[in-house]
Image 1 (cartoon, one colour):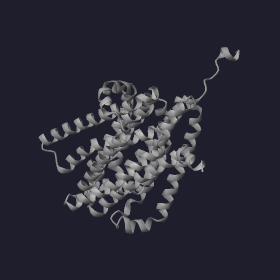
Image 2: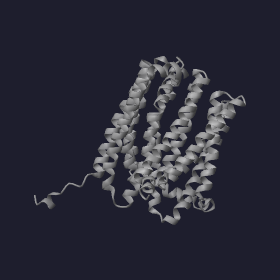
Image 3: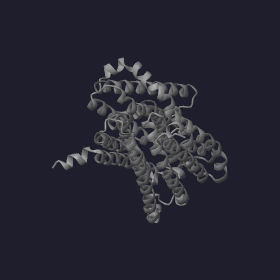
Image 4: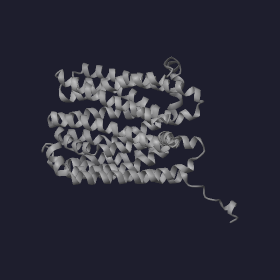
Length: 423
């Protein structure tokens, strides 16, 4: 039976495990968001969306500085030194995020702006970024099966802790977010223990690890900042200009497309370590074909999923959304367009990350993000939630064109000079 182990541990098996891993994350996110939608008010659902997005923002910054850099930089170190390098980055990330969150909580409390939801949101962030780094560590080692097991544990714990919070009388959005933090803390502890990372050695190597990742990490963080400004700012601008109910409508539409959106994340997270390994092995020519195939498959999957939603729309509106979100059909269509364009953009970005082209990536994201953020305010004032998603879609289309153009320049053979052609 040698074919079965090869299927499970080879490239196809790793890709399938990566997709299954993201499916588990998707189901957990979807299940908790649906519970908040059904148990809480529209305003509570909007508040939960903003709080969870804040945790995603923290994860994105930490991932850009540490997780993405580990995937690429580990190949420049001897294999025996990589566990200590991972431990150093984990501790640096966890310490930095925890300190920043405690300082923010203290400042908000001193100003009289702290409340239970804000406190929980800030306390969740260190656990969430630690758990995410340890997932990325498994993926970087081409072990998505291990990441799948950890995320399965996290999903079960999240549901359990959230239910416990509700039983203790916590408000619905507080219970959901606190459950996420508690689940991430336990999962991170299990992941760190099973990875057997040399934490003491990592503590001594934190300075060297930070110096290693800073050169490209600063550009990656810059790229994350402008990406978040482009892709997440619309939630907060919408909340200020149109209120939490408008945020709830946009987030409810996005929630229905969560499986498609997280499939994109799962495939890309599985592909980037493979791309980096191919480059390290001198086989970069294989990357372009894999990337094009992945893009076509993802766009097709997003469209197929959207068609399923359309076919089942009456049932979903009546039973799942309980008649409180009847007018979000156009928002679902716009989110389908946004996520399909994100598939095109993210696969191109993954190729540049694997090539350590973080500066080029950040600059091109910056070119697009500025006009997107500027356009959000008038479009939201004019059209509300649909206006924000139209701007988002236009930004993704422009960014995808810029990134694929850069990928083409990166992978194209050099043109022969006049001297070599005899002209």
